[in-house]
Image (tube, rainbow, N blue to C red; front, side, top):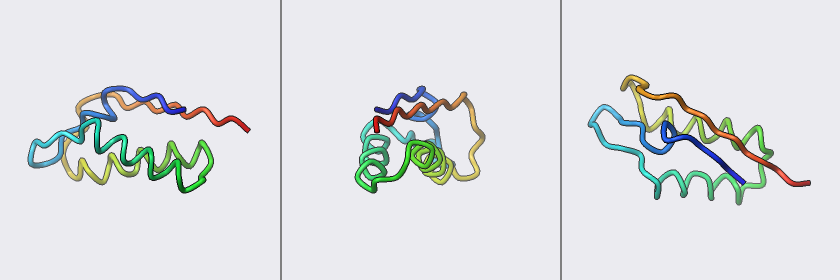
Length: 70
């Protein structure tokens, strides 16, 4: 289960494009099907958001919580 703040879903890149819910969902689904651990899911989501944002300034807080059931 993944919870994230709007700072994960709505960062802007240099072209002022927003990542959006569909792309965020794709990132989460890709990581979930890769069978990585909860901490690696968090790192992966943050990495992908940073890649999308590029050199644009971070304008909002970014929070990700991943719950893994073993």
